[in-house]
Image (cartoon, rainbow, N blue to C red; front, side, top):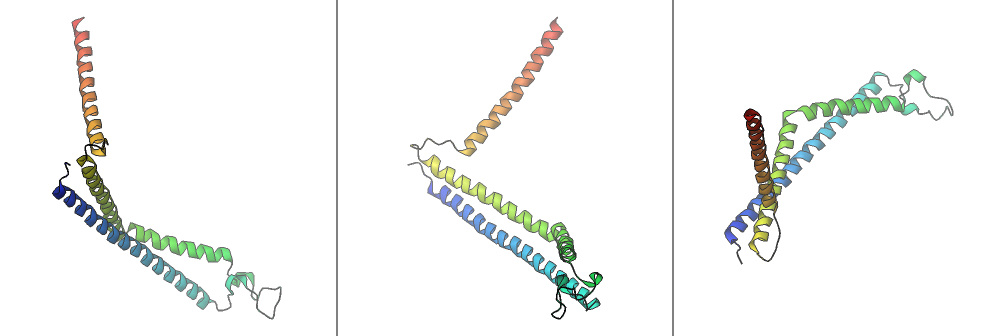
Length: 175
């Protein structure tokens, strides 16, 4: 066999390290999102407590008091409707997550996660190509070879276009 154990092992270890780095990045990313969610919910709870504190006669979601069946316990102006509740909730979440998603920490965390993901894909692809190319009985064409082929085809197309332009220009100059 034509297998180079040192090269393949090095590629495997690079892939493994980048995979663990990817896992750490995912954890950091989701931790950041979870912390943002907790902060947004705390802000929402504070807004609801402030709303309730400013007007203690507000009933939650238009609830009825036990002694007044069929009638609202307070006037319509003092009841918290589901639409009001939902708009306060969504406005709080939107406000907080807009700030979070624009923050430098979020951008850095997401960039690190995507960078780790791309590294993992690259190193694992290199590792598997190294293994597959080591066995001459496996007639696989690897992605690297396909990419090299397409690059060469594009170079040749550019050269052909240049040559065609030259021949067109030279043929018009002759006449």
